Length: 288
Length: 296
Image (cartoon, rainbow over all chains, first blue to last red):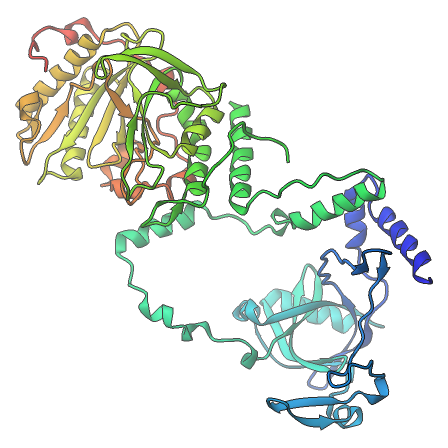
């Protein structure tokens, strides 16, 4: 019963989020966060640069909740014992590491907590490397680092990294996980990018298919180079949009206004490519 | 979704060029992208198609007659076909939708006559079909095409060159539509005979067409009912080559016809034939002479 008012509040939020000026809303959503995740420092040897850490990555999908169809009540997840089928309360839950099938090593909460790294709110820089020498396969997530207290050290580090195209590489503990991390300059700010461990990324050169590749003929290679050259351009992330999300949000807006929705069969992937080409051609023909 | 075309697509994931794994969707995309460059050529010309609905590795067919059950908005013109000896409903492609519709029919090659309706007897191009006979190759054809250009330059005429998409080259002289096919044919033949006298590799008599190691400068295509691959038309071959308009300067740089394919052409920015219709030329009476009586 308590869920009801909550739902209408969500509706209000949605309405607020989708006014006629959708663009403005877009901008609002991307505004920098007001509250830092934490305050700490970048440690380079004995030098400390005080910083505040803010989130800047938002993976915005459209979140749906599962409801019970007859009465639209939200569904709840419960842990059920596979042996007696009864709901298990939290105090009776322990963690088990599966050694072999159905064989577990049991851990209590305290045992694991004892070995968990604790965040000391410090980004420890080990060395400086060329920023562009790090392959994006390792990138995990990024955070903005803002100057805390005095900005002098921050400004110096930022300028030095910008000038040299270098990034500090080191370690950070966020919540209870330690990550390899980069501190680099991006759009006039220091940014922290957490990374994956080397052993969590497969080396693709080990794939057998690569061994079967034939060396291309010289003229074929020339042609390939020409195609790449002809299609070369500047990187602009705004050219890419999640059309699924936009469509779902549009449907939500219509539903809130009480409009009925006719379900259109979505065009296949191939048709989308054709429509993009068509739009471009129609534009060109108009100009003629 | 907003409707951008009247055409409803079919079998988009069918592979039309198996070697390159080009799907019908990509094939249609090619013609959509090339439409701004192709439509000025196609306008008011009764078309002949080669269709490969099962892909170029399978049998295709030659199509003059518009298919049954075509959409009502496709324009056709009913004309007597001398080769078929009956009336044929030819397709006219004057707009983007018709071109897309042709692509959806898997019309790999789009051939156009050298004249337009309604004045079918008055060509607007004089056409030199430069066709090398093995062991002659494309580079021999290139030499001969450059000889044709030299001759045209001397006559004060501007020629335009394109790859045939196969082994040869096509040289076109856009002309004011005042001449008959007999006249443009005589003109092309006269130039061919001149070249034959000056170069040992050129032949320009119909009986010599298949002479090995020669390049035939074919004048016979300048005839009623004959067609030429439209500029930027694909050709039937596993490499999906394109009949590609070229700059003369680029031709001199030992271009290979295999460079121009469904994959490479859409991203080219050059349009060497862009001004071709602003350049319709007059042929001098002396060049239309009757010294070339030997018609096929």
